[in-house]
Amino acid sequence: MKLVGIVGTNATSSTNRQLLQYMKRHFASQATIEIAEIKDLPAFNEPEDRTAPAVVQALSDQIAAADGVIFATPEYDHSIPAVLKSAIEWLSYTTRPLISKPVMIVGASNGSLGTSRAQAHLRQILEAPELKALVMPNVEYLLGHSLQAFDEDGNLKDATKAAELDDDFTAFTAFVDLTAKITPANKFVEKNQQFSWSQVANGRDL
Image 1 (cartoon, helix red, strand yellow):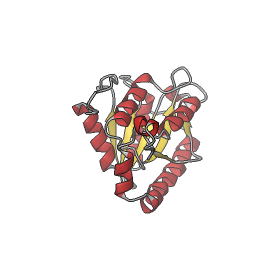
Image 2: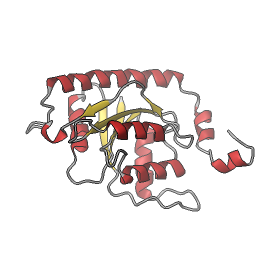
Image 3: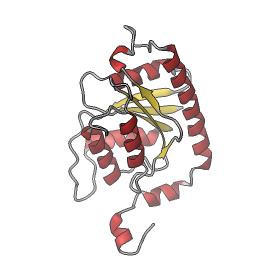
Image 4: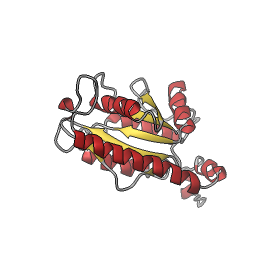
């Protein structure tokens, strides 16, 4: 199984990046996880021809080639970072690789709540008509007090949180396998990739 883990921040030092790096190592026997950065993406600026910049296209190609996506998001002011929202807007407006793509959301925060509000907001965003990601339900991996969560080797110190992540990741791989069996044919995906609100306004709702 091939997965893409998206670091949802442009911060140089990030416990969300650490979390994905841990998952890449820890679950290597179950899946190949490529870690994707968004820190070099330009701020979203609506292109007239809907063509993605090369760096956005590269991220889109990674997502399209993967069986599933893991978003690791911090929480800023009860929501996701602006840089992550910008990256999602690029994907939404141009290539739309997240349509029918299985998604797992995780998050690390030095606060006690561990990005709970940001994860709820991200889930809502990813279910938008222009995105239509298949976000795994009933699972929230919330890593609180994340600055103290990893040992010097980058492993989770708390055995309970490590076991919880094991269970959540096993559930996600099963979710990916299940969605592969029930996802509509490629023509449905291609049709939805052409979605625009102007079609709805003109009575041509998909």
